[in-house]
Every structure is written in C-alpha cells, then in structure tokens.
Image (cartoon, rainbow, N blue to C red):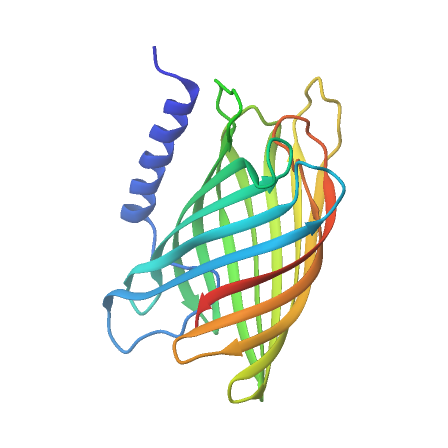
Length: 267
C-alpha cells in the first residue's frame, strides 16, 4: 500500500513540475540584478555552518547546515531557482557527538522582478528524521506560498530583506496549517577584506484544532558577527540567540538557546 510519506514525495514532485511549467521566473534568498539577456544556470550559491548551542538539554549541543541553491534559468523578468538544504542537530545523549535529527528542505521558486522588488511563488517541502533512533512514520509538510525580496544599498552598507507566507498543502505528524517568515540582514564593509553584519528573523506557524490544544506558534533568531571576505568566498563568525518552534519533532515544545558559530558561503 502507498505510504503517507510516499504520497508527500509524489505531491512534492508534481507541484515542483507544475511550478516550473506554469509560473514565471524565480527567486532565491536574496534579490539578484537582472542580466542583459536570458541565461541558463546563471547563478549558484552554497553555505556550510556550525554553531555550538548554549543549553543544558543534551538533545541540543550543535546545529549544523549545508546546502545550496541555483538559478536554473533567468528570463530577465525573473528567474526559476532550486534550493536543497540539510540540517543535522547534534546532541550528547548516546555519545559525545550524537546526531539525533536530520532535516531535509527542498524548495522550488519562480519569480518576477518589478521596481527593485522580486516577488516569487514558492513550493517548500520539509522532512524531519531521527538518527540512531526508531521511527517508522513520516514527519513532513509541504508549503505553497509567496515570497517578497528587496535589496537596498546605502554607501558601504547593504540591507537584504525577505518575507514569505504560505498554506500547508499536506502534512504528516504536525498540526501546521500556515506559515509566515521574515528575515533581514544588514551588512557593512569596513575594509577591503572585512566587514560586520547583523541578522534578525521571525517565524509564525498557524496550528489546527487537534488534541494538542495549543495556540499558534512563534519563534525567531538574532545574530551578529564579523565577515572575512576572500576572493570568491566569505567566512562569518557570529554569536546570537534563537527560539525554535518544535525543536524536537516528537514533543511539540519550543526550545531556546544562545549560539556561537561560523558560516562559510560564496561571496
């Protein structure tokens, strides 16, 4: 018999294909200036990060990410992009470094540029897994929504902002019905190879009426740090604070922690 996880994956693939075929060009995490003419594989980016988490809960010691996104095609009026991301949450329950969660994110977006703003249709799939622990059921959800991206430059300071909202189209083992997110990054270059930055993000999740009897959920993060700028890459060293919604996929409770870490990204 087909499983719910299989159904989610089939719906994700179908929606991705429909988005590629039926929506205008794309968006990623930051607005990108339009090229002079249409282009294929016009941009790619990647990131790799790790942060030590300041909490006494042995489930949450480190948070690590790696992934990337690519503009598959840029039509000048907009672009179509694909993002693939993997997060590993590392605790200390079974051993000193105990990866207990693996979180996969797949996203397809297609955008239009207008008056310095990029507006994108997005399809977002998240799948949460446990490591070295028994779990024979899926934890996943699909989001269909809209994202708005804006870039501004004030001398040596740049501001990148994006906001998105969407409806949960299918879910497994979560009570989410809609999501909304906002993110703002301010960067200032202070030397040819160095800069500083600050970031703030907020998240809202609407929940259905379920036996959990809980209200809509909120979370977010703030961080600040220094940027070391190389020829084709950037290293960021940062400290911050995060409140994470449903930090453990099984107990439906928020967690909060201080964090100190690094991030590597393409320039």
